[in-house]
Length: 399
Image 1: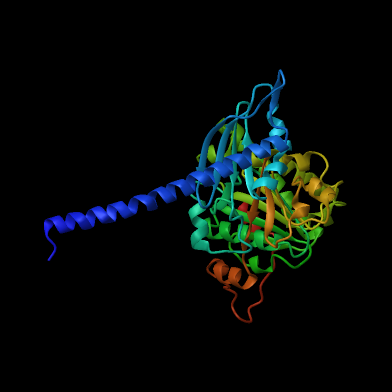
Image 2: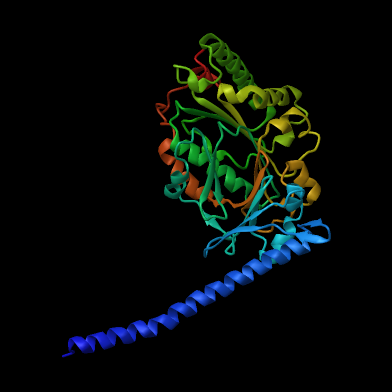
């Protein structure tokens, strides 16, 4: 048995051997930090991000370095007299030094550079249980996918109204739309949310037919037109209710009205239907306060279609892979022509632009998730039924 003195010697030996190990780890981290800081200042020099005063070069002052496995963060000052926009314009230099996955936020006096060494996953599988964690306290949650922080990014369509989604065939655009609609259907009751879907290619929205939330799946302008006219009439009614109540949003009315989302795939096929495009433009202009929103999708952006009020009012852009920089600029997501991974998009909300890996949701999986929300077929066998194509919509708008 070891005596008390023996244990003391053993303990002292262990402590003594641990000191060099601690020092080695500490020194290794210190050296790594010095290399990172040196790399940062080399980026400043290469990008000419300094101010010259009397032949003296004034560089940004480093305020903080936080090096974690998932994210490296630098906080530094913006020298007086140096335009903060210069940092944004020269952000490519930071990518050359630290890798393509960075986020740079600059104000008048300070900048925050975040570096994500792991980047984004090549594929992000849609799992509803994970998705709902990102939808708390959002009225109409739009699930976008996984961001560079490793979190599921979502935003509120009520606060950021109207979406444009564009991308080449096979870019992941269809899966994103399926994810958005499926999530909303599972989160909201039919008396809280109604959809009008335009499937002009007859390829995207068949799984949403007979869903209780869906008023109609339209395959042509002629099918879509009466639904949109009803929406326009409903907006007029809601506007009168807001005036009578003295409020500026349907969310402030005592009467709870369902949100209405008009989602049209390949909207470019409607560009000659001026009456339909006028209604869509009206929704984009005044729909937010009335609880009416649009989600428009197209493979290739059309400059004439996206010119004017409609383009301005689409405050959210999802730019998937595009053919060239001209197309990406029309969408409003410059850089999306450089994307080369299916499901990868640039998400622009107001002036903020970030890269996202969208959820992959297969048609078959979406069907299973939507099965509990199917309308019950109460048709009696062999009993003739009188068709009324507008009955559901009249029920929605309380006519």
